[in-house]
Each structure stands twice: as C-alpha cells, then as structure tokens.
Image 1 (tube, rainbow, N blue to C red):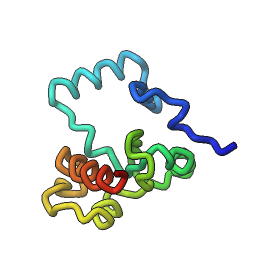
Image 2: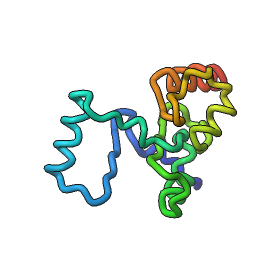
Image 3: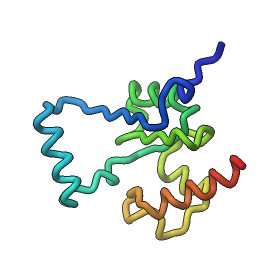
Length: 120
C-alpha cells in the first residue's frame, strides 16, 4: 500500500520544525514575527504539495535547498520545486516574488489560483 501522508495528517495540523532553538527563543521569534519585525518569507526556498512530502524530507536531509520548504496540504500534486522553478512553471507575475526571490502573499495567491484550477 503506498504511503499517502495527506491521509494521515489533519488539515488543521501544522508541523513547525526548528534546529537549535530553545523554546523560549522560539516564543521570542514568534513574538517578533507577530509584531512585524521579522519577515520569515525570506527564508522560504521551495514549495510542494502533500504528495511531495517524501521528496521534501529527502531534500531537507541532503540540504538541497538553502532555506525552508513549505508544504501546502490542499495542493496535493504541487511538485517540489525551488521558488525560481515555480515562478517559471506557473508564469508568476513579475511583481509576485519580491526582489531576491522572496516569497510573497501575491505569489502564494497566484500559485493557489493556478493549481486549484488545474485540480478541478
């Protein structure tokens, strides 16, 4: 039977991983994000859908991407690609990614709209 991670994880479940942070530092970091003092979008390097989780785990282990990988559970078949690869694949508007290939809400909205149309 093939492993289907999206069948095991609730749509309301979020996994957040950190390396080397103590809980008090993580809480402080989250406070800075809430206050708008830190934008974590600049740490996103790749995206994928739920079916790409096994590949994403291998990519983390091999350090394939120089940043975080975001998995969108509701975009099951979104391939695991770097931001620049997604920009080309999805023909994102020029202003969708901030300067330096930084993930934005416009890029996310564009990917959602494109992928959800393909799923239906």
